[in-house]
Length: 286
Ligand SMILES: NC(=O)c1ccc[n+]([C@@H]2O[C@H](COP(=O)([O-])OP(=O)(O)OC[C@H]3O[C@@H](n4cnc5c(N)ncnc54)[C@H](OP(=O)(O)O)[C@@H]3O)[C@@H](O)[C@H]2O)c1
Image (cartoon, rainbow, N blue to C red):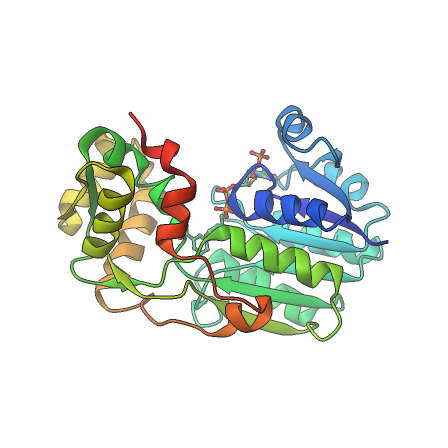
């Protein structure tokens, strides 16, 4: 049986990948900086400390591992000494397959950290699969949650732009599937989205119907959103600029196209935004 190392397991994609791999009966090692949380959440898994900013933790985390699932923690911008050094260590440790979850369009966006990780894998010797997911449905429970819970509104500068929201449970499920049976997936990159493209007004309607109280979509201006992220969410300048830029991109249709690949790979349709909201209603309760 293969031993799989799952990073980011306290987060969205890694959590889903670890749960799925455990459910498949795989030998799973979850790794991250908060080992206590990992121990509490994943009783059936081995736990290792992995700090991608501390190379002294890499070798032990990779020891005896056949497959790795890697995400880029949002706070890590400099990937050379962190994620890319970790990939090198995984290759030295004899890892046979590496799945990296990047972001849709990363192959064209040379300035983003994911692009540099992709290049490093592509130019290296380790067999890899790159997943390129679009906008996460989980943003409604993370980045937008406070505005929904406290103000009953979704407030973003996307105008009438649409996104084909993907549920990270599907990304994790696919990652676990590829790591269990990597044959045919080496040196392939998959563009992944949810099943339909929705405007934020449509998303607010789904929240209203599923939560049983009115949630409205309020169009933010770029400047209004910057102020909102700084004052209300207390985001740093870098995160504010990135988050604002991503939402302005939605106005141009950056994330509206729907990809058939997830359904083809999973052998079933992707989860919808409505499925996600219905399964996590308690996240938006006051
Ligand atoms: N939001 C979107 O719509 C979207 C769409 C496409 C792609 N993405 C990309 O998806 C990635 C985020 O994925 P996610 O949402 O699954 O993550 P997430 O839920 O934000 O979780 C981040 C994970 O990173 C781990 N982490 C943080 N610092 C670490 C460190 N120094 N060493 C090791 N692990 C560390 C955290 O674990 P511990 O703190 O427990 O160590 C946590 O498990 C980002 O790269 C983002 O750009 C996002």
